[in-house]
Length: 264
Length: 285
Ligand SMILES: Nc1ncnc2c1ncn2[C@@H]1O[C@H](COP(=O)(O)OP(=O)(O)OP(=O)(O)O)[C@@H](O)[C@H]1O
Ligand SMILES: [Mg+2]
Image (cartoon, rainbow over all chains, first blue to last red; front, side, top):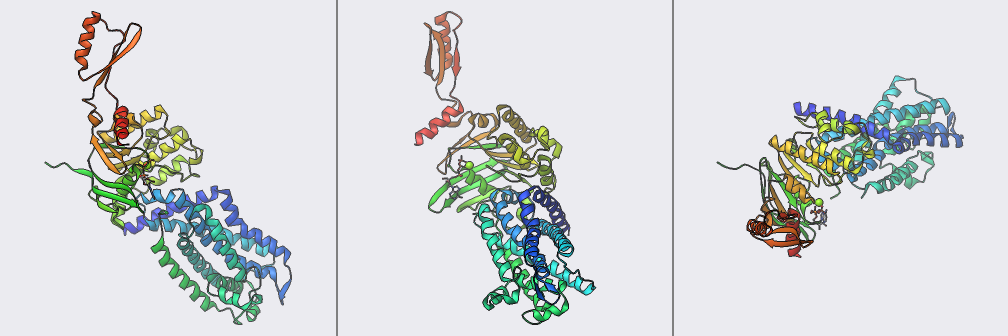
């Protein structure tokens, strides 16, 4: 018990330090926090067509962007910064202290939580004020929104930690990770209406959590009738929860098993 | 009565592919001792020290630090890390954090940390307390590394070239700090390329070359330094005269009689550690 409390306490202290470091790096603030908002403005302004009665593309896009935001603050951010910490010796130094790896993970998870809250708030704010995103009024929709965000960012976090062993170096990490995220966004119906994508693309995207997360966000922010326009003719929330949970479990196992303190 | 050893190494071998970086090292460091590892670039110092710190795995051999195998996995290793302090050879982390932020954060990791303010004074970073690590000079950055190495009040401190980039004054105050730690009963293993540093600090010195220890001794006796011929020099006929002799005392008495008193500009010197070291390494080439 004492050990657990200590692990948690250090994890919380680490998250404070992580946040401080994050906010002091201007590029990471812009790239991670504001990039989705910038994209929102570009796409929302350019594509104003109506894609279904009472639904504009910009509304569709905002829902997708909120889902992508979870991928940005978790997966993308961690899969890029952890290799950098491996290169600059942060991890090596930590390895030489009594700090436990769980505290390190807790610190990262809390950092992602902070960033995720800020980013989602920004997207919701600009989405509703500038692009007519309808904020749901029913409690059940907010509940769906909450579990989607919690499950989605947990999944995104563990996958980011797991994927951090892939980039060979910190400098190359962004070049490896960013294209994956962008391609996944294209395939998952963030930039285009999902049902308008080629069939193989849809099926490929359905393997990964982002497609399910975007669909889930649409269930929250688009009119109920729009469900008939989805691939299955409904929102498939149960399946969404299942797919994301499976990825979360796999990611967690992989993150713990494969985590590397140094390059060797 | 048995001597307790803080560090025990037997037949340590480390291979990187086909390259043997450490080639059968035996080493015992007593509790409370300051031991300096000397050796040319690529000799295997960092490899040896990082095996002791638990960063690298030995290819074969026995390693015990505080009676613990550093390669052990799991929470036992964590408890052990409470008792050791590490200063790595080169670091660039925590660039965006200030000196005080970094040191006080790391203090949280340990059960009995040293006082943060005291450590800042001990390493001489008082004036830079709010500076970000990226704004520090090379030597100041190194002092931060030393601070993070000692913040946990370790029983054993590993220092891999700790004073690289220190100005002479900083080096002297670092020596002072190491002596304080020794007085507190800590065991210290350091590597250095500064022979004067080894001479000043070390109880014993080990010279390592090509992965092998070629000699271990005190700074006074290493390489037969205590019995090596001394140089006696003096001024005569407007020129500096030099002779090498095993018995400088007799030589000085002889000169004293010849000059009938004062010997002009008399100097008697034994080879310093650096000269002995260079001769040892040179003979191996
Ligand atoms: N990770 C590694 N992979 C392959 N070879 C390595 C690795 N680390 C060290 N070596 C090799 O092992 C040998 C010993 O290196 P080591 O870093 O231990 O030397 P050192 O005595 O610390 O040298 P220096 O005084 O330059 O710090 C060198 O030939 C080096 O090239
Ligand atoms: Mg070295």
